[in-house]
Length: 253
Image 1 (tube, rainbow, N blue to C red):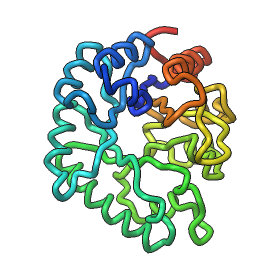
Image 2 (image 1 turned 60 degrees about the horizontal axis):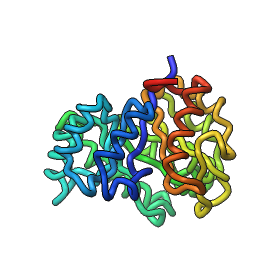
Image 3 (image 1 turned 45 degrees about the vertical axis):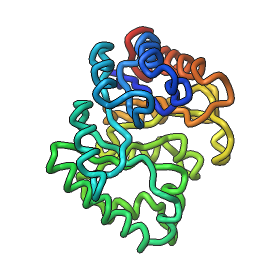
């Protein structure tokens, strides 16, 4: 069976600033089965969670600060309010991935956060951008991460950024297998970092081999950081492309 389809709400951040509830209702009406959160501007985690339950939208995962230091209790409280078990580290600066030693330090901190997550019934995942696929001393940075990370730290593979970083997304998804239960699905020219994205299916990525490699993915999550066209139209078009091809499933065809 095709994996269920969710939307990373960061995609609609500008629309949501003035009407969080209204935009989320449109996401459910468009057919998405789940959401991934990235903050709660204009609302609270508690109110958002009530809305998601009302609309039968599963909170697949949450992009969040790491549950460490002065953020620890706030992060744990937010995850509890959402009823969400997957905590995703969405970004660490590219300068932290320039040497094996700097990557080891990144992994030490992620392992500390993972220990806190596991103590609280959570799973920690790491979301890549274009610099983790890039080589460091001849080895892709994400493969060095695997050497230093605890095996219980999982990955949310952003397939588009893998392509921009110079690797084959299908090969990376196949390599990581069950260690990458969440995939970000986005599209665009995939030439450099600055170019705007497109609706899924309207860009340069070849999706069939990615989907064929994603046999162990629990969810596919559409995310567009920015878009060359109307963002809402791209969200709807992405849904219809992925469900129409049978690559993902939603509420409606």
